Length: 120
Image 1 (cartoon, rainbow, N blue to C red):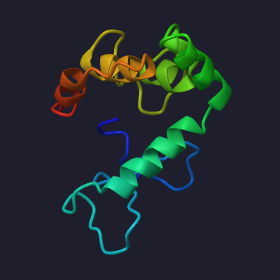
Image 2 (image 1 turned 30 degrees about the horizontal axis):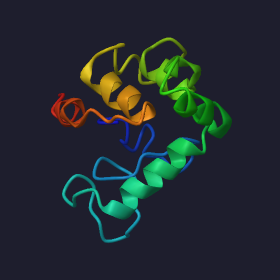
Image 3 (image 1 turned 90 degrees about the vertical axis):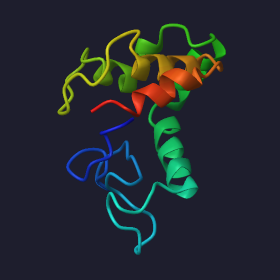
Image 4 (image 1 turned 60 degrees about the vertical axis):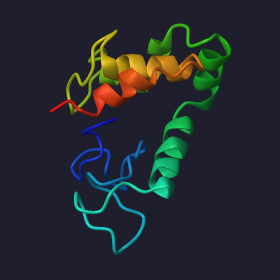
């Protein structure tokens, strides 16, 4: 989730969904915000944070091939369907949404994921 890991958002250790990496929350004390690249361990921690949000719902969505992903609060909030301090950060079918929903369907669209990182 590009731009969601800033220190005033999901880059805070006080959030139930935490995004680790170069935009904010770091695992290693020596890593500097924005200058040091996101590390594999940070990506792993973001993954763990995501899958522990709503594990039962996530399991159902994945077992159903990614069907009805809006059952997940992560998708609803990012699409602006639920209250979200960060507002709408993706629309159904755009590259960020396609990156997430294709991952949920166990068919990651790597091109959509790469393009979503280029967003301003």
